[in-house]
Length: 208
Image (cartoon, rainbow, N blue to C red):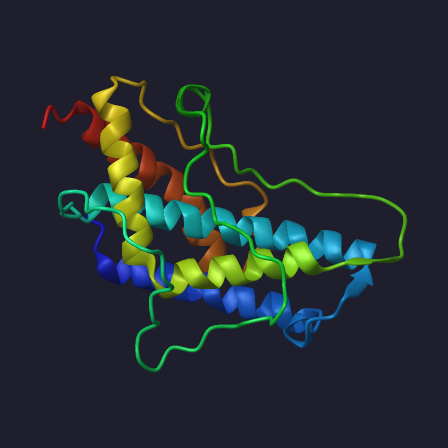
């Protein structure tokens, strides 16, 4: 299947819409310090699904859009890149920070097994629990969706390094609980594993 930027743009737009819905459901845009445990568990599980979809879209970009990698540049003082004109980012002042992981640090076990990002649920007694980590994860996903090209290039470099070490080809496991998503996002989540495994097979079989 031919994958172009329109597909990626559509997927990221649907993921962003789902993220806004998640925030609105529990008024997370108001940055509550605490929320009921069961509601946070539900929000965290849904957010994990969105994170998985965004991560896989970035992975697909790195594999299918033929990203041109420039030679590595000397490290400079790290500064936050400005957002494109007209883009607004959900910011929670004073909230904890969270890094959106593209690939785990330990490559070999990850590459020989399924994608380790399946949906898990949490349980426990009801009551107010902190929201700081949940809000930080939301901010991290927003940052990725607003500047996906840079993350895709970073992942493409990691893939090139992994292939150079003759590591086994990754395997992307099927999406879990896709029926809980909107029809559009659920269809996207269901299609991504097959598209990624196909793209990985092409990439790993390419001697270039």
